Image 1 (cartoon, rainbow, N blue to C red):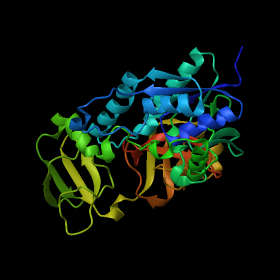
Image 2: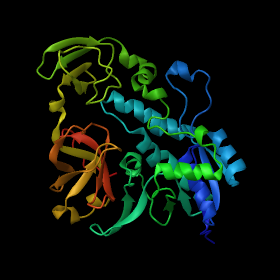
Image 3: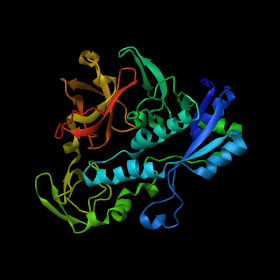
Image 4: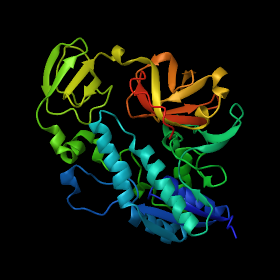
Length: 371
């Protein structure tokens, strides 16, 4: 018999997932908290460039479930999956000249799949998370999709855009229609230790987002020797110790001077070469995606519709058009956010998610393989 009032809540030790569990219990659900253990405590992590973790804090979840919310909880070992599908992919993406999105990969390949697996093994059909998004019906595409939160800066539909097999019947987002301020106020009123709860960051396993420092240790063999730096015009600007970890559009952290504001334009990993340019040279009016997924790529409804795309989680959607039957798109206005390896999340005119893909620039590496 299905337990329709049973739900598993993925908890991280942060305020959003804690309040999600608290709200569901108040609504009459039989709630079980599940925390994924994605790393062992390692006293040498700072030497490796791995800083204080900002996600999935087991002791905090245990305290919240036992002392505050009063619900059962379980700890699921996810270290192997996390290392293989998130950390290793993170490193290999940079080695191929791409800029990965580890939070999206974690939701897609680790958190949601393992959460759902544990729920199914225990006869539970519903799972919930503390993501800021909600299910809305797209009239244009005649299906339910994840809607952007009212506060774009806190919206997390982008981070779930690659996640499979979730729908309004099996996945709940209790705080999806709330603001962060409202969630924190609820936490205070419920007696949560708000100041001690985690605030997740995108690269949770890299201290203070020092990606280059992290990769310098983890990929030491790829950092040997000097990297040549030149302008888009071909003029040489000297050398730098490494370019692993740099991102297209990055300005901070560059140790060369060109007499003007310069940004990373492209990186040639095999040739150990970095090309810099002015800001205006970063703007693109076309882009492609590989590994497309979602109704956008399963229907011809898009042929006469304006589609909106986001290249970053905090970016407001911008209009684009699908070009023909492939996975190429044109932008109404050129944008500087087209970065290899990042996620392109597509929305309808009501800001409801309709598809996603991994960015490639100008169709340089077309890939029609479906995800």
